[in-house]
Image 1 (cartoon, one colour):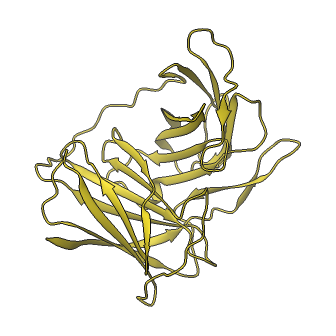
Image 2 (image 1 turned 90 degrees about the horizontal axis):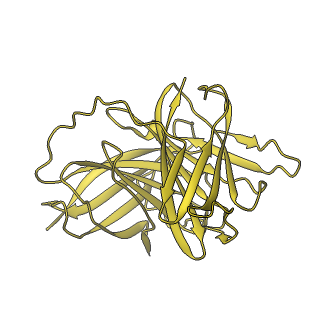
Length: 271
């Protein structure tokens, strides 16, 4: 049996436009979810009544407008009608999925939640004629226990993802809340350290970046979606964003090397 599990109000992802500081700069939206919109939307999710970790489950997400009507038309952005980010409360588990649109405001997705706990589903989409929107839905699996996570995140600027070395460059001397911030990811072969030349577009851009603030409880206001700049070297992916408040933020940078999508995650402290 399926039940309507949750209804969540949406916040527009606007945040204005930020210009990348380069000669061939393009405008890129950095999207803190707290920005206002003239219209509101809401999302319902239909799930089995018994949600078990480690077992596949089919879910349907329904999008309605502020009049309670199903949203019929959506525009593609970054090549998809909806981007679904699924994380657990610790931000240790992370998935980037693309639900199938069934029509009449309904999207279908197959989920697999790896361990018992509370999960947050960030639905990122663009109704036709509107601004980019974000809905956050919470679901809890059977056997979930309260999260105790007082440890400070491990801060590093180098990661190895398979055969790829990823180096994150941050502003010096510190990342400051409220300021435009350039995040640079330099990719090289792990063994030879030669720059990656096989970088291909992912979702129509050089890379994809989602950022979440370490927060309890996690809310839609903790979510940031940044777009890749078109400048920079062939092995470098640059993003511009603004961190709204001090704290610890986790970054997931996705990129396509030779047809294989890889993900590098980093923790960043914002003063």
